[in-house]
View 1 (cartoon, rainbow, N blue to C red):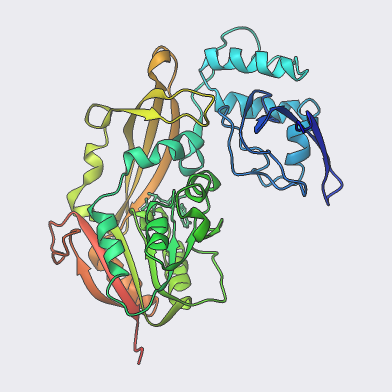
View 2: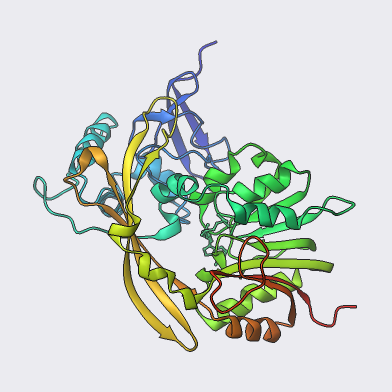
Length: 386
Ligand SMILES: C[S@@+](CC[C@H](N)C(=O)[O-])C[C@H]1O[C@@H](n2cnc3c(N)ncnc32)[C@H](O)[C@@H]1O
């Protein structure tokens, strides 16, 4: 039997969604109308699938309870909101805007996106890890390395499999490696764009994924190993954020459990190399599904402010992306600020949180930390734990 061309769903919120199918296993994106999605965009209860269309709309992910109905039926009614999303998403990329306009026309939306042709749109600043482009390129920029070997080894040599909590798990490279090794793993990240990638990895179905921050994470379970890898510790900018993340770890640590995380050593001033000439690289954006082609993208960093914060630094930087085929277009820009904590300040924070360091390494070969080390890698447990 051939599948229905249109499917109407009534959600428990009383929304009515109409989804259109282009063929077997091929759905129209409810936002831009192109036949890009290989999964049904919403299930019968109105929950969104984890697939993102090539137009990069995060359908229904914007925490607006009306988002799902807006995406399908109400784009017109909410045009000013959609228009501003479009402009943010397609800033300066006029060829993409043109293509999108024709896609929108196909689903009956003829509203002008830009006022006048080729109006200059200032580059938008997107929240770094919430940029779907960044998450789709993240694994190429951060492939498996010695840091991953180090973390994986933390779970080895035990008689039984471990309960592992991976806070700030990102695209789940390590998380799923723990699952592959047979451990019981929970991966936590606030960026659904990163989780989108993580969940679809091999062994992604063996992991419990949760969309929340390290500060807000709550579970009734205790974990034998809690990690925060890939310098994710540096996303905590304020002392309170650091304390709150450390408290989450402490509260969820099993007796004899171990916390492991890493942060870059500010003494090395690695941010001084985050300039376009030193960081520019070409990456291949993988096709979002079997109907699209890979695209060559140029990516580079551009250092912003470096501020003193007590005994550490707050470093702001931009990451810029440009399609090679559209090299005349403005790049898409994301911005991030991260904190570099000194070794001394880190020890003070651990102490304040009631945690005690076991080892502090300076690199992934487990060499001890010293002033010129690149990394500060901490393994810690609970203070006065019998
Ligand atoms: C540099 S990536 C590291 C990802 C992964 N751990 C790795 O090793 O590749 C930092 C991650 O931290 C996440 N993140 C940002 N704020 C966070 C928070 N408050 N709590 C937990 N994770 C956070 C980001 O979404 C991102 O996925």
